[in-house]
Image (tube, rainbow, N blue to C red; front, side, top):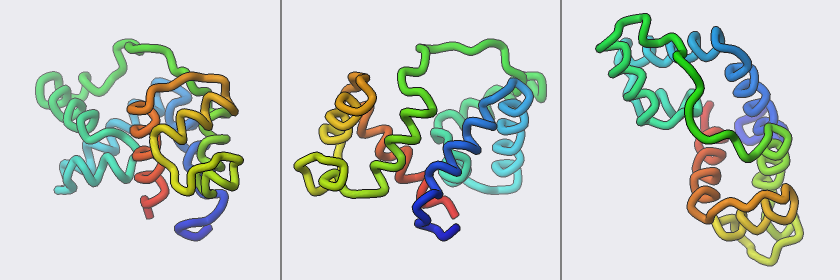
Length: 146
């Protein structure tokens, strides 16, 4: 399993899925993030290693500082429902390991517009170019984590 191994992205997705599987595992994940920050690691580095946004790590720190350990417990899932299933994320991760041309697209490089076209054609889900740019950054950060 090398740093750029072909199946690394799918392993990362499987681990992320396991972390998100239950309230307890998400709680443990938040505690691990806090522990790393408490030991002197910067929020941006913790976020990159754990696959979260730096603002999320900062939010968890503020919750902990205001509510203590109780603040790390999940109060309820908020926000918009996920549009891309883990199966689609695996398809995207696999495609991003190759050039867009190998996936039947005309562009030589991945960008938000090209990824949006790919997702629409393969997953039948319409995402904005900006959201696809976020996805690209997310997958790039995950593949760079040692």
